[in-house]
Length: 352
Image (cartoon, rainbow, N blue to C red; front, side):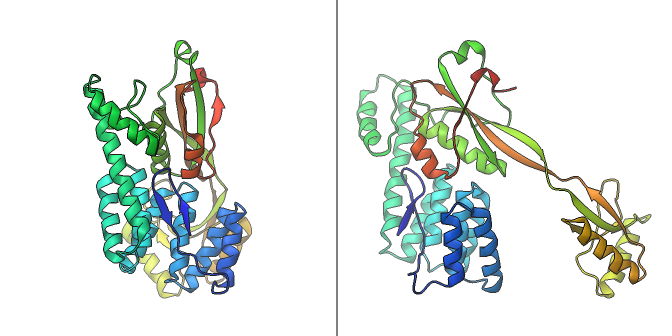
């Protein structure tokens, strides 16, 4: 059973039968099917902590990370599984899907060849390899047409590809090979340009790389103008337990070694900032937990202190602008990036 990850490339997932599945894995699937990806990942991490080489669990973790837009983590998950089990074609195939989404066509090509080498009968990898060749042909035709719009042979060939993957080289098509990547600075849209444009915002992404992949998809697949916007959001308050700064880093390191020798764990020397050369004795999500740690340390004779920390979280959104009559292939986008919606916005507000 396969899950479609993009309009042209498939992602494979090793499912076991209900009878053979471990109950905890079945519960994880149920959480994810209900849209609770965070809960599913939490349970899955617990399963993998107990069974680090649970193949279905590791593969499914990569899929869940992809569904959340955490593509860099998904890639690392599939890559490590492929290294641990080179005989399996599925993680290699999934790597190829994500590489292709990032425009890393050479890496995608090699991953698919490796998947086929692992299992020559694995039809999904053969299909994806064909789709990748079609994608590369489409990019080449678009570049050729951009260089010479009188070349009707290119237009005819592109029309055949359009029927397969929905991207042509018409007058309004973007040239993927020539257009710059979306940058971290919002491009902005003037009031004069806004009259015939439709604009949207997509967010929030937990990392810039994942947002960039989605922005590139809209640019290459739908011909939209995209730019990334960074945000700094206030996160949850945390509480630091620490020994006050020492005069030198060497002195702090010496005290840390003494603490470790006394059986105290989860400690580190703070390298910079207002508490440089202090020894961190733990960061806690609640004040009660920090107080318990503080009491424990003071009972053992350590003059530890506690302080609240303001934690900020960096997120990214995508500004999207396109002619009003442009087909943005919303269904295909949402199939590729589940849970990501295009929210209509006033074009004059983009870039503020």
